[in-house]
Image 1 (cartoon, one colour):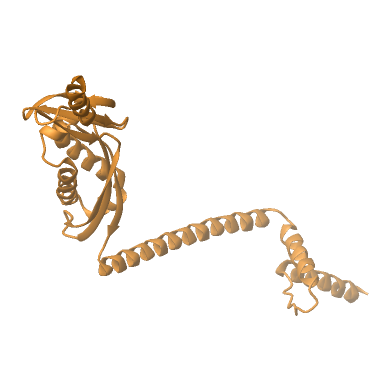
Image 2 (tube, rainbow, N blue to C red):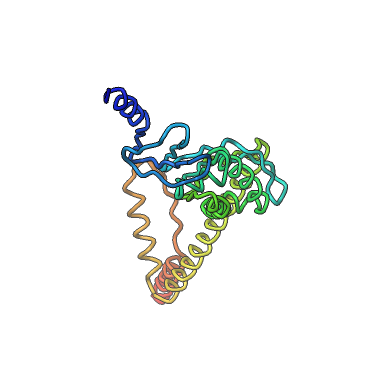
Length: 254
């Protein structure tokens, strides 16, 4: 007779046992009203009068697909991102929003388009981390009331129109050519200054020009395949002319 009562009660207890995993939290409802949080482990949820809902509290990655956005300077772009968030308060995640995963996905899309519309293209390309942080702050401010915590936002791709890519490539090439021209001109100025200093120093030092000429001849003579046309310095010609005049004068006296 006792088994008739014990078996139904045992069966009722067995079907009332629910398992909450370590990475989950349970939200219990009694008569349709929120009645408490269920921590990990085995918990009792009485049929008919009670129900429960599990919430995964692990960090989730929401892949936000390409979004068409127009920058502040009217350049059309396509941008994609990844948002990392987790449930901080499971009760709010269930009670405050119908489907928090879908809600975060939609909020991220609209926020990305709005933030991109506030900046120019150059700022968007140069300050990706700053833009991502701006998106994170806006999403976190809204999702905080849903019991969610946004860890980070990472911009994946910024896709530009083909004509804009070609224009930017031409601009970058022109900038590189400009820098190369400036560097070459600065090098020529330095070389000219050094040559002027060297010429001035040789002019002030007797015999320096002759030594430089001899060194040049020595360097050239190492390669026998070269034909060298040697220009005699003016000082040497004047010395020879003076020596010739001296000899002629001495011969005339005889």
